[in-house]
Length: 84
Image 1 (tube, rainbow, N blue to C red):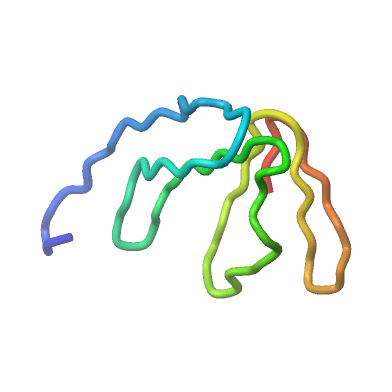
Image 2: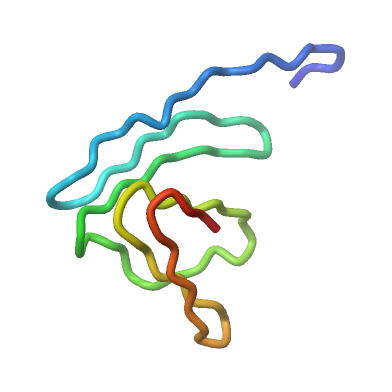
């Protein structure tokens, strides 16, 4: 952002289809320090176990549940309308 420029808000929506198969990514906002994407996975469509240690993430469950693993192998199960 240019020096002296005033920040502007941007309205975004979390409306996204729930899928019966596959997965989708919808990029909804991007700034200098933040990128917002809505990723939807059908049941069984989750991606391979991986980490982005240098990035901040928010995972929010729209329906069903998701299991997250920490570096020690401990799990946290996140349910509908929950996030971590």
